[in-house]
Length: 219
Image (cartoon, rainbow, N blue to C red; front, side):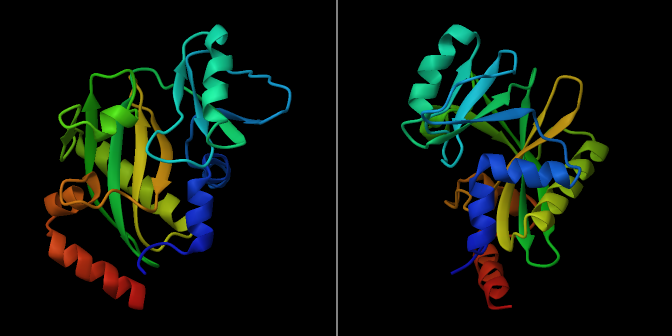
């Protein structure tokens, strides 16, 4: 077995719990609220916002809500996957940036990549349809922004207690502000996935990446 332990994996899988830990550590996260199944619904955020199952992956059950009238349907879909739902403020003009981390006590960060697509957001169909999204590796960022993303990712990795590997996802708004979206302790791992491609661009080939993960698991 390689990668994060049960505790870190569970916290990172829960969008609410992980955001609480990240915010407490002083890392920037978007505003969010939590709703539970069969409880009264009140959302203080102003549309647009996203409705997400708190503990699901691959953008399953996620909807973008542009007006309050669409909230009921979005919640019904999200509650099919989890009895806990997060409502997250949408980021204006968001660019989606991702960085790969590798290590235990001292994590290393790869170059930063960017996901670009034409869809309304990076939904399930866009993620798993060939040609629906483009991966820019490295992302077109100034050196200072890339370094900031890497430093924030390493800090998040540390405060969440992750070991082995993770992909850390960010939003950057149209004014250049960064928001940490989530840590994925089980990133896509085909030779064409973002995680190994980020390491390839950073000088670590796929076979060496696999060997390094085994070494980290044995430490």
